[in-house]
Image 1 (cartoon, rainbow, N blue to C red):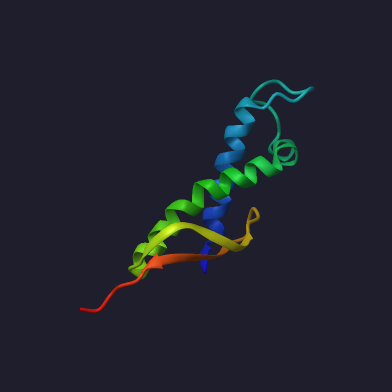
Image 2 (cartoon, helix red, strand yellow):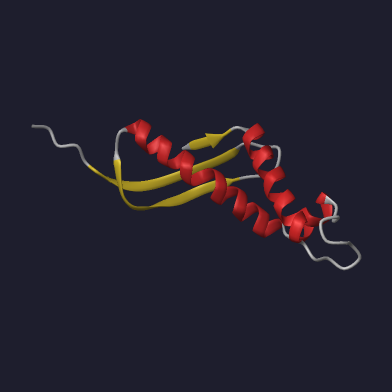
Length: 102
């Protein structure tokens, strides 16, 4: 189980929304001038994916290193919750190389 604090999630959301706002082409708004609320509503799925992709791999690798195991293959995510202003919570199951005793 891995939790990322709400402050870091909010910061990631702000960064990703800012990137989308720069290039969003929405009728009625000039490029780069679209309000954040419109960008969040229009690109909610993509923004959520980018936030997860930006936060999760690095944190997962650090958590695995802290555990002292070497994963085999990709983890299977069984639980994932992420919202702007709330902590990111993920539960993943993965196989790892066992440490053999000599």
